[in-house]
Image 1 (cartoon, helix red, strand yellow):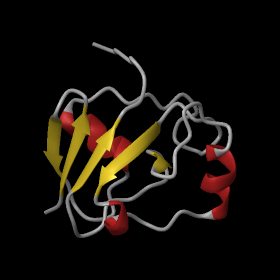
Image 2 (cartoon, helix red, strand yellow; image 1 turned 135 degrees about the vertical axis):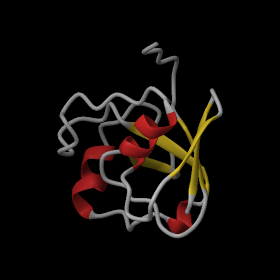
Image 3 (cartoon, one colour; image 1 turned 180 degrees about the vertical axis):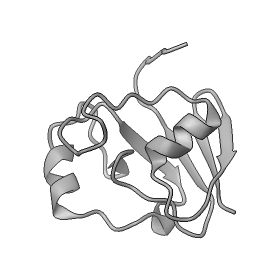
Image 4 (cartoon, one colour; image 1 turned 60 degrees about the horizontal axis):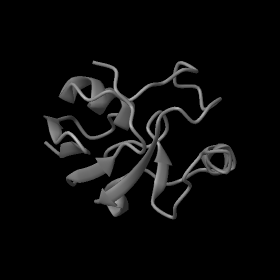
Length: 101
């Protein structure tokens, strides 16, 4: 199973292919907010994919449009409520200083 690691804390979980990044974060114990409930209506689950981006699901137009509103937008930006894990390992960084613990 693919392994997803969340930085800066280093929390990791093995998840089934097709798992959303936001669900992988929950499985890993990493704090990744999803204020809209995962319906691509906000950008609170914005992450930067540092490795394994090519294994994630394709960036669709709806996600791309919403990402334009994200603070700290980078070419490697994705929304955790839209990006699904593929067959390979992924490393993502949760931007900013979010602490939910």
